[in-house]
Image (cartoon, rainbow, N blue to C red; front, side):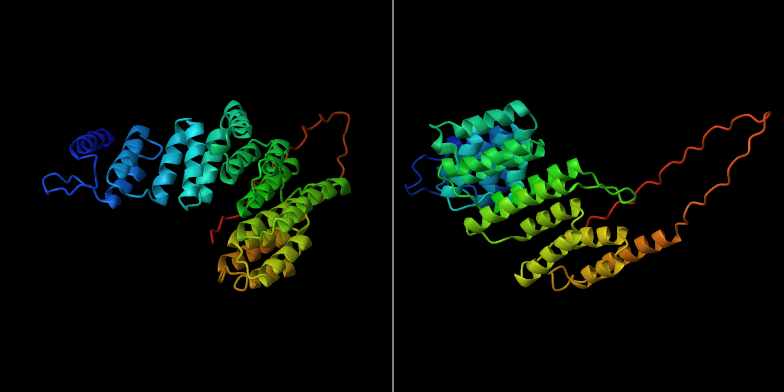
Length: 351
């Protein structure tokens, strides 16, 4: 009950002396444990901004230090209520207190600001305004950049990335992960994949996307950033979306050599694409790499490859029907319309 909780905390706030340094008797000390305040903060995040802010007042009153979870809770509350300046300010304060916004938090902020193009553009202009250094950070820029990616505006996303250098902000590993994911979103939209009717690529199309990926790789190397599991996964998805399966295989081997664990979904994707292309041996080779890739045994992947391959072998080739001889008296028969069998979706396996 948020209303009752708010009322109780308001009473405690009034009764507890503001001078926390003074010695208090048992009757005067209305201190609430930090763990309880954390629970209230988590329960009110995104739902009751007033209660969330009251928790922060109580934390300050009792002389506690806000926790990482409390920062994330209030940032989500600001995002949910469209208080974007407060949201970005809290992200800066979070970093000053030694905490890093989680990837899930940055994605949540990106989803919220990207829901409206007007809000997204306003957020970008707010961060770019020369007098707003106090709300600008790499994390806030990453969130806005990802917001443009979610809105399928790859050019605006890369412009936000280029603004980092203009504001003397250094990109981090999340920056390059999001950039590669944005490139994947754009690529799969341009070349939608169907196992029974894979897209045809012109050489210039492949060169365009591979060139953009190489720009990200070069910038990452220049910034001295190591490739992460998330980055490798997005890079593999980009190459698979282009039909460059052998190149994606090389990326898997690179991750293994660098001892960077790969998510199981990376192997599922590549092995499934190989199977649909009829290269079953390479699909099984990918499955055998699961343990050294940090995924552990993947019996479901083995079964998946076998089932797809068996289904492809059992599907008979359509027989050519004999030509129809029409007589003068025969009426023209309506054409036969064949419906396409629905494509079986690849199961999502979380590492």
